[in-house]
Image 1 (tube, helix red, strand yellow):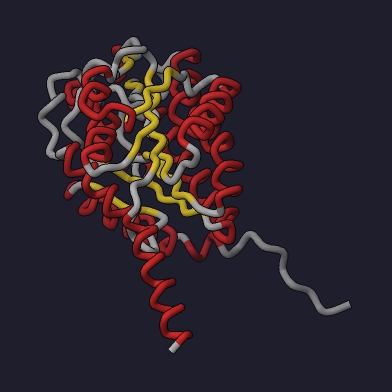
Image 2: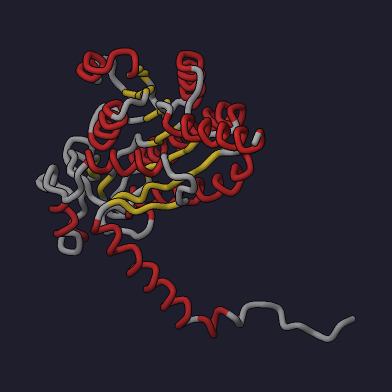
Length: 300
């Protein structure tokens, strides 16, 4: 009987722990998906440390949710600032349960068109910013023996799009880092999920998009991609940011969350086709691929 009581108490404690409010750290929270997810997480009763580039960007949400929202001015490209910001967050709230590396933006331009400074800035935010925040938060999660890192990737981390080569490259780099990290921390109680999001109804292709100076040589080839990223498509995308927030809340509540999850019907339909095409091509060229190893000679 005593064993049954202890078992029941343990199960009750586990349920209580899962139901307890979480503490989130969300980067790039001032607009777009970041803001929608921040709002959804707060509405669900959790606490959010939300990083923004400009003080006051979340004043309306602070007024609504009070001390459960802690805005933190942070430039994620500054590694020292990322470490200081995470340390401040951990000290103020005591623990960090979920980290969403969401800060990012798009750079439009053909591979030949993009300027060096623009490419470096793209990687500084989309890849290095996520890396610095990840490095800063891992000691906190290791001490806790728990935590869930969500890396905001994209369907552009699975496939590529003309005129978005550098954005895709930054997301492919994030995918590689995230998958490697998941293997490194699996025994430490830390979970990692790559969020491969499709198109969501935000201003991503408008106010936050950086565009390279076009070259006439690519005007015809990239006519449709250029138009699609002109800003005219902003706020017309099929994805609902509020529903994305709900999906992430369900995800972090899972006992065994996936390494990767697609968001949006378009992403769900496209990703398998891309991978099937890749497999078909590898198999078609398998014969040549197998000709490059040393020929095994007789044993010495």
